[in-house]
Image 1 (cartoon, one colour):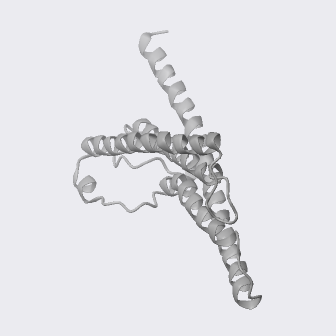
Image 2 (cartoon, rainbow, N blue to C red; image 1 turned 135 degrees about the horizontal axis):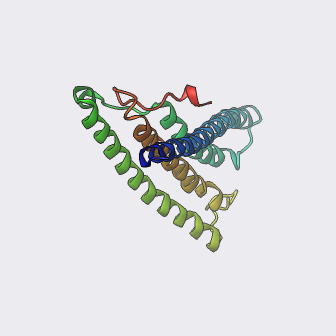
Image 3 (cartoon, rainbow, N blue to C red; image 1 turned 180 degrees about the vertical axis):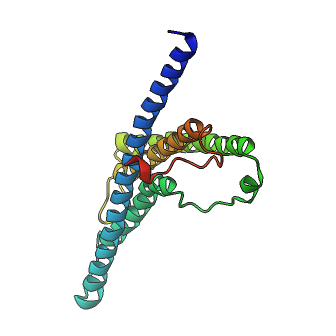
Length: 192
């Protein structure tokens, strides 16, 4: 067997392994999107219950406001990978559309690399905050007294999942660069 055929086989195996990784990350992103949507629905239901308790029953609420705030923050963080998967973030693509395919790919990879670095730093400090709240037993200064590690857990989890989706996007661009003249990410519907 010649060296070139071995190289082609190795490259094919590498792309297949990357494909499995990308599919797993896409599955995780979809799952976190579903969890995020459920948290938003729960927030709406709790808000309706809070309004009923306050204005119909004329009673005070203890846990509802705090729960809704934490659920919405967690939904935002856990929804990041799903929004990235769908390319739902606001983007400005005037410059990339004006570039030729190779510079466009370089710009996309540079942008994703910088995003990965920034999100990794944020995830590190998010984990540090979560861990500190866990070890020191921090509680909120409200009547309900929530253990703060619970809402803080959304920081590292959401950011790590987002970072994994960014890495999957980078791999997808590298794997498809020779096959796609427009250098668009791999079709997300085709991987399920």
